Length: 298
Image (cartoon, rainbow, N blue to C red; front, side, top):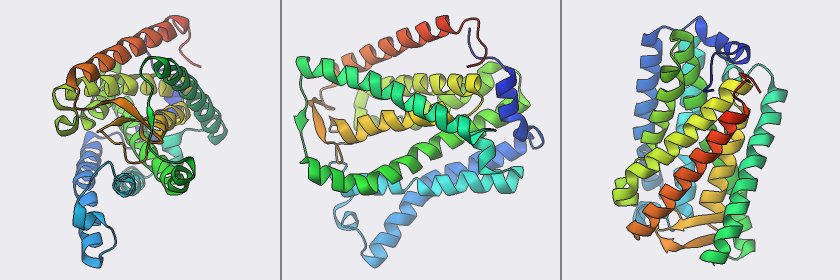
């Protein structure tokens, strides 16, 4: 029922087998961790020195579009780092992280994007009758920001997918047989990356649970399809809706066309929404697992 090392997945992680030594993965992980911590600071210091951005005077305020753009731009460091690590430490290309067939990657990315768009659209439609969101920007202003935000969002989600469902999952699958290592561990790390008690307060661990679950589903689809396409499409659609269409007020609202009526500081209501979303996604994933119970591949 859970994903297994089927022929498609074996072909996907085959480029990692020649350099599956754990020391390589350890060095790669360390470099990525250092870049994750230092690259945003480096950007901030450069901006301060040359007076390039307003945020060097005001600080990061996620209700400001420039701050969201800055946050997304900071992922360029991770994007460059993971490609460099794979090339220098593992002697393989960016394409090896995406999958054997770029055509299949593109097709699955479209399917993943369409699926999340449909589910998010239905969810927003239902919530609009219960507690409608409020417009934050004029459409023309929002579209002008999207010219910069969409390419940076693609870099942001690509960085995370290349690292967690690409690099980590491939290298661990090449080294270990246990699915709990190559399937569960990268998804848990992905969830922990989103731990933010400063923003989410006592609900921070529920966010970790939700993002870990998202990671497990993305990892599952990567295994069954043998490429990164579906995970990329899902992640892009999810972040597009969450950060740029209907955003949670008080979390990352700077580029949202609409804001939720509930504020992130309303701990009890946010907790209820997170638990509901978690249970709903568990149910949908369970239905998916039942549907593919006799299918190792898609």
